[in-house]
Amino acid sequence: MKIAKLFDNAFKDTGPNITLVHESEFAKVLSFTFKAGQGLPLHAHDIEGELVLTVLSGQGEFLSETGKVPGRSRRHVGVAPSPRATASAR
Image (cartoon, rainbow, N blue to C red; front, side, top):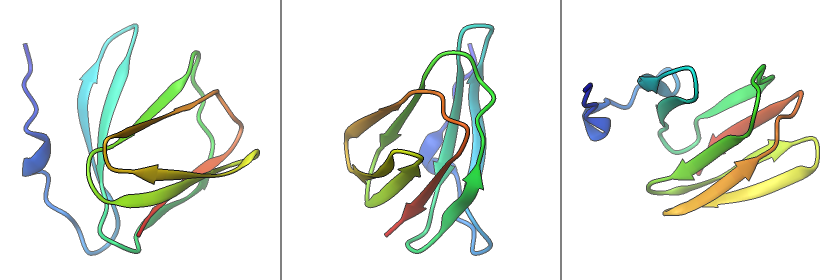
């Protein structure tokens, strides 16, 4: 079993730090660490199934074609596959 130490991921000044936590034929788990004000550009997800986002601490927002969704600590955001999405931290 692979054990990922999520909070050992250093924050980067140049953008979010992205770490692969787990990957199998059924799931892919990524850890993104953002500093306040950092974000991801509008991008596409080429996946089957749904995308589930969990904010562990802090707050931000997710933007999809259907509008903005707030992201807050210890809340989950389920997103149906969408051609484009983005995220930002506050």
